[in-house]
Length: 119
Ligand SMILES: [Zn+2]
Image (cartoon, rainbow, N blue to C red):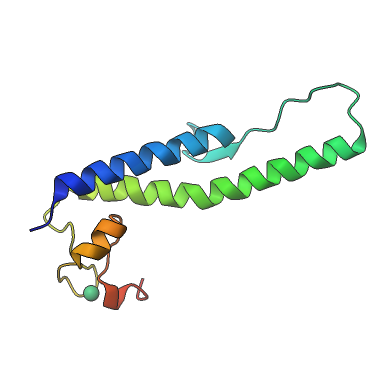
């Protein structure tokens, strides 16, 4: 029997961790629903070109990190929403139960092991 409560707790703690990471690097744009990197505060008005380049690289790094984290967060939010549905824990390809170990490792999984390459 699938322990939904345990999975829900795991999902919620993962969501909180991800949100914390995302908030450290960017902010949620309420209009688009996307996370955007925050440029670092300019420390001195007469920063030299090297500083500007560093900040730009840093901003780029944050942006790409956000692009990696955001789909993970969305996956978790989707899994949390789907947790109450009858179809939770079923492979979307073959409709069979997803292996419990797989679900515990990745509660957002939507397919069984066999079909994980199919989506
Ligand atoms: Zn399957």
